[in-house]
Length: 163
Image (cartoon, rainbow, N blue to C red; front, side, top):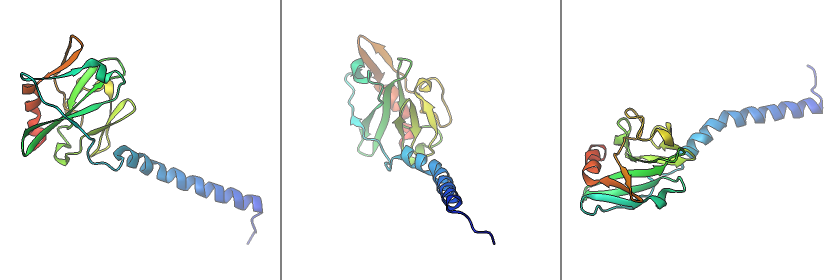
């Protein structure tokens, strides 16, 4: 049996550690996507005269803001508002048609909204544009006079995702 030189042993050991590191990279990325949280904190929102109203300035930094609306003692509807990378303010329920039963919602990672149940990533510019499947379920909103406005009736349509 041939003996390995010290440099060969070091090279073999280095390659072993590299391969182990590469093998665990997808697992570390997935764990980061879920960030050990099952829900992202949401601010309680109350409509005034049937409309949720938020200042546009609240979303200028591009970070998603999560809101909750307590319909009854046993039912809370969650949604988020985000200014996407193309400058459009968008809104969606914190649920999708596929994973809503898990009650985990979405977390923002850079320019993506990531489903905390299945790990699928969705570009911010696709919120309200692409619907169905695991895409964040669209929520109608309007922007007028420096305010993002969402009707209470539109929010109540999403109750089916939060049973």
